[in-house]
Length: 209
Image (tube, rainbow, N blue to C red; front, side, top):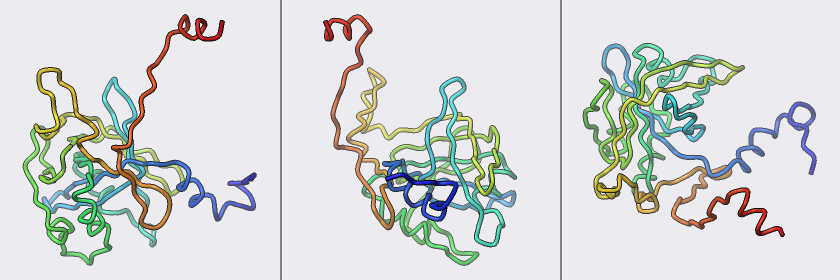
């Protein structure tokens, strides 16, 4: 099927793309305003984006009235935030955090989650998350209604029970992280794996002789 995302099919383009660019990692971003009031919000338009320096990116759209969401407003003001990865055991709590609560209600309290101090920044982490990434703001790129927050990673926390400390290796499947799938409430686990080893050019030639 041919889909003209800039023409006659523009109104369907977002849902179609969100159905094929999968899975997308689910993260819960904690931020706080200049008065120290904490906000937590889940996002799936997120990924690791670079190694030198270590950076990640999150797209934070505006509210329906065009005003910035608390996440972007807070990060703009304080230049700090934490990316907390979501695993299956807290997926329902993450879903509670996506509710549009009225002002004054804490998403974390409503979801029954707790926080712990970060190491390099003032924004706290979600204690129940198995992986927490402390970030400082590197840039915000505005493209139309998109506000792509680029964070410089300054500290990483991984729960001890998922690490082989001697080898500094993560037992990734055991983290049981989740990803966003197509529309509605569809998610996936990241524990269904298969392996394909990379080959050299010479190995490829040998296979194709």
